[in-house]
Amino acid sequence: MSLAVVGSVALDTVETPTGKNTEGLGGAAVFASLAAANYTQVHLVGVVGTDFPEEHVQLMRSKNIDLTGLERVPGRTFRWTGKYHEDVNQRDTLDTQLNVFETFHPKLPKAAAEAKYLFLGNIHPALQLEVLAQSKAEFIAMDSMNLWIQIERARLEEVLAKVHCLIINNDEVYLLTGERNLIRGARKIQNMGPAIVAPKKGEHGCLLFDGPRIFSAPAFPMPEVADPTGAGDTFAGGFMGYIAQQGNADFETLRRAVIHGSVLASYTCEEFGVSRLARATPADLKTRYDAFVELSKF
Ligand code: AMP
Image 1 (cartoon, rainbow, N blue to C red):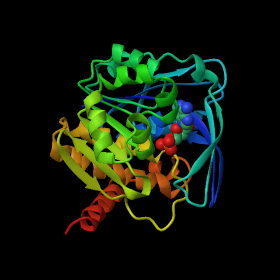
Image 2: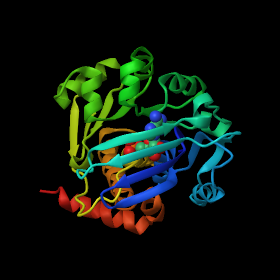
Image 3: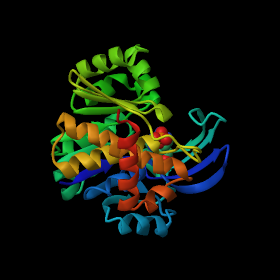
Image 4: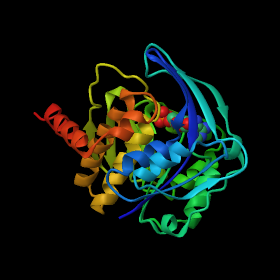
């Protein structure tokens, strides 16, 4: 079953303790789509400017990602610049240029609108509502960020009331609920709408709340993280792609989906931008999935 993914398509400039990558392919929708394409047909909905390199389009096409919903409009592509600290769990956003993203209103082509699964990347909650009005999805996951929690809370709550799953990081749980404790925070979020809440803990893994049930997964231990940009979106894409492939979201499937998402996120962190994620083969994914099972079995 297919998955629609809506979010940013970007040119990212990223500096980490190990190096720098200038204007590489990025954006939440790109990381999520590349991850999900390992499991299911993906329909990407987003916008780029006339400067968006053709090679990026080709890369996504080569993964069988449906780009009918990727608009190309006059102007410059969205750009984001970030710099990571020695502790790569900490980063500063140095620059955000919305460019063509500023006037973007997502239009879902037929296949994206009819997809049974939907991932709403981190875009303005008003745009997320526009997507929901067009989508016939039966299972919807969303992401958000501190900015929207702070300045668009009412509309964000409207979106939350309509989705099944929120994938979010720890700090955002605190911002949204005032709870430092993830269990209490997740319970409060569940009361706002989504029965499933997946707070990511960066290199410390992910918790999954599904109604009263809890699953805890580690992140894959890595000797070096080159660039964690997009790890969260990659996780979400792998998680949703696997659920769409399985065609259900029962607790057992969700637990495995968390591990698939974590496997893909570990690849994203290994190199700058999407390069390692885009090269991951089915055999790579199986090997790391098995290593994950081994790691957390006792
Ligand atoms: P993550 O590391 O999971 O937070 O995702 C980083 C990705 O989100 C980068 O590829 C950015 O291009 C994209 N991004 C950063 N800021 C925004 C924003 N305000 N709206 C949409 N996408 C963004």
